[in-house]
Image 1 (tube, rainbow, N blue to C red):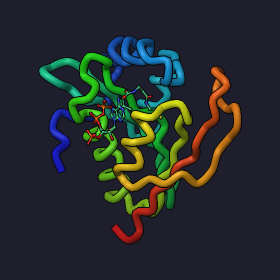
Image 2: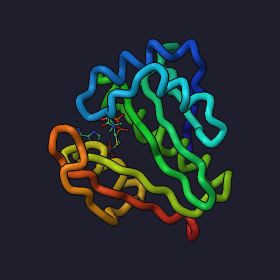
Image 3: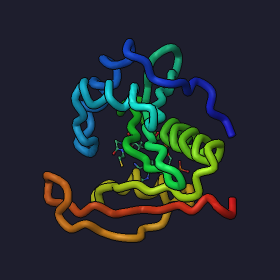
Length: 150
Ligand SMILES: CC(C)(COP(=O)(O)OP(=O)(O)OC[C@H]1O[C@@H](n2cnc3c(N)ncnc32)[C@H](O)[C@@H]1OP(=O)(O)O)[C@@H](O)C(=O)NCCC(=O)NCCS
């Protein structure tokens, strides 16, 4: 598995993270304080992907044994479609395995086919739905991946 260029996020990345976050309607719109919290909380694993020296994406995980929860995943729009999102998700799943977490969960908008396809291609299954969960009225799909047999 190739996770080159992925490293823990640091405060100097904050402007780049906020810039990417602002450019997608499907991100939760985290504030600087929220990103700072995700970087510093001891149960949070938060990484960035550097592409040609530029922060091109980020991903976050909460480690709550025996489960992990993907909190966020985004790639700069101009870098989308080149495999970076998959590399970031794989880095989170590797971390889960290294921490012996047996299950990974996440929430995604039912109107976000790119993310749903990525998660399904990594083995996540839809296990629930929260109607009208997001501000735009879309449902949240709850997705789940068991790591026990992998
Ligand atoms: C979801 C996201 C992270 C995918 O990142 P990416 O780097 O563009 O994705 P990749 O190039 O690694 O593609 C991985 C898989 O995702 C799926 N995918 C990516 N873009 C897609 C699109 N436009 N339509 C359908 N499926 C798509 C495909 O299954 C793809 O696999 P394939 O290349 O073998 O076909 C990116 O679209 C993004 O940042 N979206 C905005 C933020 C967001 O909505 N995050 C999810 C929050 S839950």
